[in-house]
Image 1: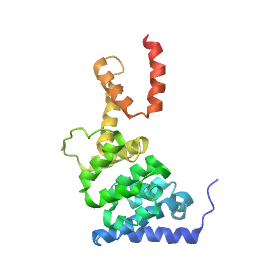
Image 2 (image 1 turned 120 degrees about the vertical axis):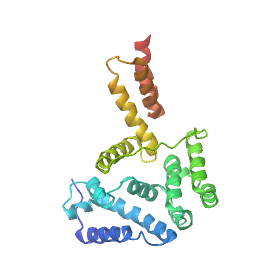
Image 3 (image 1 turned 180 degrees about the vertical axis):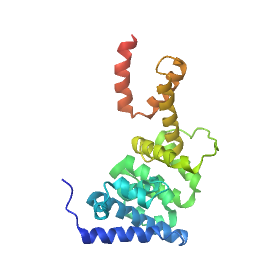
Length: 232
């Protein structure tokens, strides 16, 4: 059963969200502070289903209206509110919400055992990209592999489909995955489907190998237990 809709509270929260989204012209530190507040309100909208006040059908539909370019930022802000301790959220005025997003990845992994002090210190003093790489190294246990930027032109009429595919992949893989990972998963899925009829077994093997890397350790073991008896 859906929660009882508190119309007065819902109207207050929805108004606050619209006020914060109109805050874009403010200076950076003020905007970061308000975005932390925005994450809290978005979590409340989802939990209380306040989107029903506007006759919408789902929380995703609500996000599509408030974040028409990409909903990923909304999910990042919600993750900051859900996973970071209150004392860390207070620091985000100095740190910035993008570093807060990286801190939330660590907090989600470690739970109550998250040792926030050294990571907050690093976030204060390290450039954003250096800090992101440091967090990625901590989470994966290895240095970030070499990367490169790929540029290509798309028409405005194509943007909606591309963004929807990337957002869907992000929900499946986890909001902490980069858009590059999401695009790779989409391409690997296409290659696997295109080569199911043994047109190119090597390409199919490559795609399946990439899929395997995205599985959590427990699912990787379960997959191998299913495959190894058949291979022998």
